[in-house]
Image (cartoon, rainbow, N blue to C red):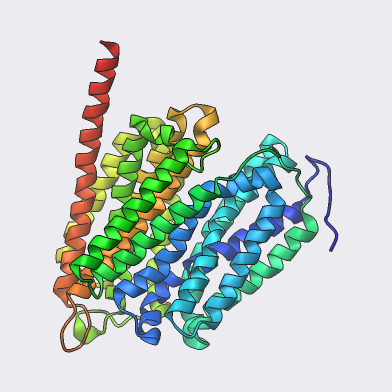
Length: 471
């Protein structure tokens, strides 16, 4: 099929609609696991830790893709790179829809994880082909449809998985992605590379990928079935070696994947630390609540099926989407630290209360909505604060670092929550005891409270460094 070429600023509604439909389908594919994870665990005989690994694999892949997708788009053109990423995502969706076991499903999730690069590449195309005013509206539409796709995926995963099979909840969004990608190929003008001489730090990408995947796989093994002390020590050494090699490569390469000088700035590592803590607490909550909803009624649960779980999680998805815009407005008015403190207080109070009050489903629904909103406004405030605290030329680097940190925090939190359930499983039924959920909610509340301490410590250090600089 020949490439469509059009002059900048003449982009019609059809290409924008194609990007929007693609974003909608990607959001749906990304979110189908949230309500369906308990069903997958039953169907494939997975432990909570292994179930968490299924969802986390997509997040970890996305964390690696996020900082490099823009560079690939600059070098080769946003349209060209977007089409190739979507080919990988489509192949991953097909593989997941046919997966007979956990290893094949994990491979499918790895391939689907590159979808994280679709949004920045879509923004590149919009900015290159539309004037500023129209591009802002188009970017808002694409973001809104991606968020809406997440809600659609949360709702339709249950009816599809129960009416057909869980394989179809991957297959249907993948089919829409393939059609939308073909529409982008046909309708979207080719965009020339902005920087033909831009280099991609492939050694840095491979080393960081290896470190993240080794860490997550090691975490599930250590917190799940357990490993001998020597094996644990070996994993720690391997992760440390990969991280050390990555740092050395990033310091020496002319075009690093991540500029470590940016990460060394107090404002940046403070923001990264707080983002990691806040998102880890939310990751635990996001894993624990669906698991408790799916527990049989005779085992202190609610016996909710996948469709019911999707409906019960929908208010949390809506609250999380609203938090992005509210977090930006609140940061502009009050500053990021005030917003993080307020969000952490709400999250900690909610989770401590949930540890005692979880006998009705409405309590879980309310807790999910409050914690999603609190985490959303907190991490958005940190992202907005960091973006305005650095120079305009460093905005992309700063936001990429925080996006990666946010993704890793959610993944680590989910894995820790799953390990708590594994360790508290009943010896007879194999199901987590109620005390395991109480422990999980309490630990998540403590993590939210740690964010308050981290805000205080980083504020004191920042103040001290500013005084020293003036002296």
